[in-house]
Length: 275
Image 1: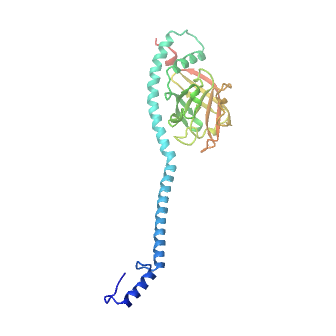
Image 2 (image 1 turned 45 degrees about the vertical axis):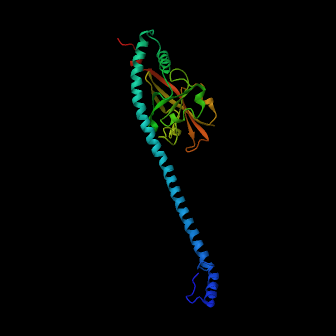
Image 3 (image 1 turned 30 degrees about the vertical axis):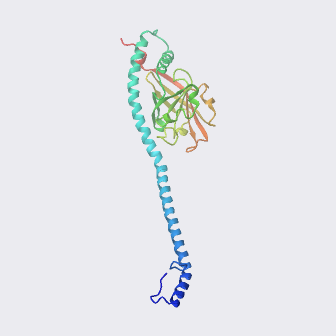
């Protein structure tokens, strides 16, 4: 409180009255309320700006997710390609040794079946099985082996592998060893290998090359089922089954592409013994 130099009662009483009006700190009550409101408003603006920055960053990450996940998948496919070349060469040597003890003039389908069994005995989860190609939709991806047995029905079992590319349901046989060879793939992320499979129609060709044989399939039909319908993995007379989520950006249903085997050709380097 400011006190007059004379110290008289008049000045003291007048200044006291003024201080009371000001609320005892040199400011009037309305001024204090205005300052308090301004401070609160400034704080709110700061929080709004911070929230806007956070939302902007989050939005950027969401928009960038398909791009960096696609890049990740491409790197993994490159890694798988190198592994696939090495494993194919190693299997060719093994298969050639096996061919020396195999009866000659066996039907091709029998040779393919035996080679498929031999190849499958060496596979582990994550190993590349073969290259899946669908020219109509520009699909060219290596397929990996998934978890074997009933573990293959657990969505978490192959989740990490699906980031690298399509994955074989491990409880279904390898191509040539039985039916169906069932494969799952992402629809919208990690390169979205199965994004366009809804465009496939009856008669469209699908090709698969493994270290032991080449396979040609023809699309028979497409269907949509619930996510828990595992009956699509049973043998219904179709050589190949492709599964993915539908509609895009949703996991409410599964799109199934059914294809029949048209031809299987054992690779010469795997089917014959060295002379």
